[in-house]
Length: 367
Image (cartoon, rainbow, N blue to C red; front, side, top):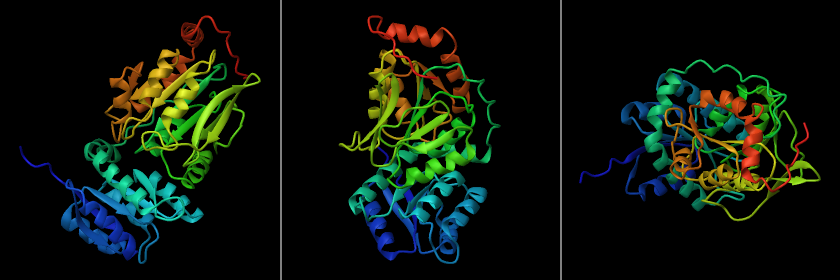
C-alpha cells in the first residue's frame, strides 16, 4: 500500500516556547510534518509561498504585523485552513472571534489556566487529522461564496425550541444560520465546541450582528423567544422544564467524546422534554458528538436536520448522525431556515409531539 500523505503544517507564533511545543507534538505524529516555523507574519508569508502547507497555526499577537491582519490578507490571496492558538485574555478572546469571522476555522487556547500543554497538543493533532478531508470544500467556498438564502418567514406563532450543535467551522455556520432566522424565532440553544473565555466573546459578536439577542448561557435562565443561548466553554448546557417554563442548566462534569460543552448532553436533555416541539440541527464538526443525542431526539418526535457534506467544513458530526439514523432530513446550510419554518408550521409540530408519547400531558411553552 502507498504511504499516507502527511499533513504539512506551518507554525506561526512569536513565542519560541509555543513554537517548540507545537512543533514537537506534530513531529511525534507519523501522519504529520512541520514544514516551517515563523516568529512573525512576514516570515510566515515567505514560508507559505515556499512550502505550500496544508494547515497553518497562527498566533494573533505578533510583532511587525498582527495575526488578524495577516489572516485577512491570506484569505484574500491564498485561502488555507488556519487554526488560531490564542491567549484567553479578554483581548485575545475577542481577537480570536474576529479571526474566526475572517476565515479561520477553529481556535485553541494557549497553555495556562485550565488548559495544559497536553490538552492543547492533543486538540491540535485531532483537528489536523479532521481537516484533511474538509479543507477543499470550505476554501473553494471562500472564493465563491453563494448569495445568502432568503430569511425564513416569521416564526412569531411557532411554539417550541431550536437546538444547534457544531464544532470545527461551526462559528461561521452558526452566524450564517442565525442571520437567516427572524428576530421572532423560538428560543435557540447552541453548543459550539470552544474553550472557556472564548464563548462570551463569540456571543457578544453574534449579538451585534444577528436579528436575535445572543447571550452566553448561565444557570437557571428562562428560555425566551428571540434569544439565543450559547453554551459557555468548558461547561455543559442542558435544558429542562420548571413550573411550566423551559430553563437552562449549566454544569461541569466529565467530557463527553472529549467535549465540554457537549452537543450530546444538550440534545439528550431536550429529548426528555414532553409536549415541546423541537427542531435540532447538527452542523459541521469533527467526531461524533451529537449523533447519539440526535437519535434520541428523533425517537422522541423532534425534527432533526444534519448539514450535508457540500456545505460542511468537516463532515464528521453530521455524517455520524446520518449513519446512526438520527437525521430526519439532510440539508445544505442555506436550506435550513425554510426547513425550520416548515417544521413549526401548524399541525406539523403538534403531530410530532403527539407521536412521541401519547400518554403524557403536553408541556406548554410560554410565548
